[in-house]
Amino acid sequence: MKIPYFPGCTLKTTAKNFEISALEVSKVLDIELVELPKWNCCGTVTSLTDDDLMHHLAPIRDLIRVEEMNESGLVDNEYRVVALCTMCFNVLKRSNQRIKERPDEFKKLNDFMYLEKDYQGKTEVIHYMELLRDLDFSKVSEKVKNPLKGLKVSPYYGCLMLRPKEVGIDDPESPTIQADLLGAIGADVIDNPFKTRCCGSYQTVRDKYTVAELAYDIITRARKNGAEMITSSCPLCLFNLADRQKEVMELHPEFEPMPVLYFTQLMALAFGLDEKYFGFEDNFIDPRPLLREKGLLK
Amino acid sequence: MAEKKISLMDTVKQASKGVISGIDKKDVEHWVEIYFLGKAYQVPAGLTIMQALEYAGYRLIRSCGCRAGFCGACSTVFRRKGEYKLQTAMACQTRVEDGMYLVQIPFSPAEKPLYDIEKEKYEASVFLKYFPEVARCVSCNTCTKACPQDLQVMDYVQAALKGDYKQVAELSFECIQCGLCAIRCPAEIVQYHVAQFGRRMYGKYGIPREENTEKRVKEIKNGEFNKKFEEIMSLSEEELRSVYTEQQNTREVY
Image (tube, rainbow over all chains, first blue to last red; front, top):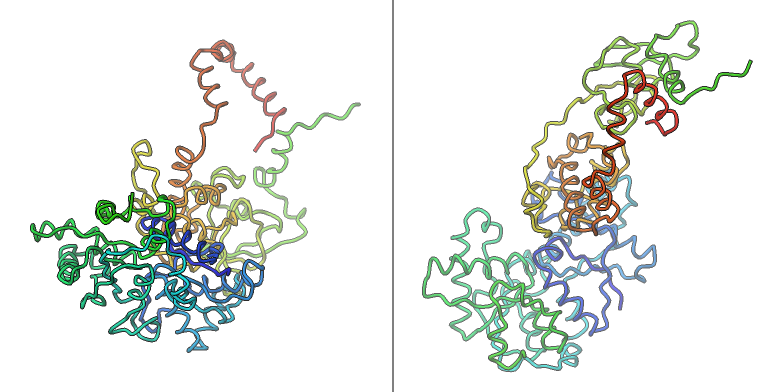
């Protein structure tokens, strides 16, 4: 299956391990993620201001690329675009929804981007996890060579793949999609009552200690339930939960660090892929000692 | 009598004659009306904006440089009568049109960060360290529309956001740093400084060192050209002038 793929800036800079693992995992599943030619920033953070159309130019421009890919034959009648980063997913999908509901804005944006082909509104934005669910997680299970048996993983969702519920890919209050996926690759899934709590988002720029407290709560609750590791599909959540553990340790000296990974990294491990596709060296808290201890990594 | 050979220098002189020595009104068949800073001027059709301003009596001490489309000093903003679009141009490269309202932008105020590329890591995130406003790009493409060099400015700004030095360098290679993109950008990005940083970094870390340059630098250090320089230095002014003219006549003049 060939499907348009929107990486987003973070996956090309600070979340390279997310992209390399996902691309390789997809190959195993016979999914070819075709990167959008000439994509631009997703828009980072949906503008909720009613008259701030300018901030919807970026996402809609990307959606035009998907239609172009179909016209130029890069993909064959595939108007779905996959995002890995949940921020990109959320922003692209919300803008798409918004302008489809508002014909006047739809026209205004097309008129403004007169150098582009008109957006026709055919594109549909989906998250990678959704794509795997549609494929069926049993197909994912079939490819597992190295089941993550005994590894206690707690999925963390945050907000962007769930809320607002119009764009969410699962129940906004009690999602299971990531848990189901982790179960499919053999991990012992640990529930965390704080799995949909806010990670602090961009407050991390303004006040890192507030965010560190949030991270402390989320990680501590996961640990109380027995988790050894947390997974996420959001580079910002991952930054707040992982990199901010430095500040957590300043505030709570007794705190023990816990690895936070992209779910695709664990998939790559479970599929028995080459180590270079794991990207563990880029994780702020190195998961390798734990994985070796569990006998899951050489 | 054999026709006198017209040198390239003479051609250049001839081409600028109108501006240098004045145009005789009765020789001009076509006239256009332009508005500079709101004031109407009748100028001969066919002049560049820069020549037209000089014809109108302005002595340009800013907004004027190489007169050949390379230096980026003569940024101009104009509208045509009856059009809502704001246009941008280089005054030395654009001919006047009837009903053109124009003004020159002699300078683009822009923050220029200091960096030492010897000490920078060749990493994707360095762009945002020096140019955090790049993250404010809304992909409106106004910069691209403003670029008199027809560069894909938005694309290279987006490439900077992704930390793709190669793309930034290649897409911005023909930038003349006129600043029109930065003046028009709603996100207040200084695109041309971003691009220059990208090219410098790519030149230093992204591409292999040019062997011929290193060879030539070595030759210079070894004094292989000293004799030639001494010869030139010892010439009288008259000899020097003739050598210069000779050289200008045999090479491409910009």
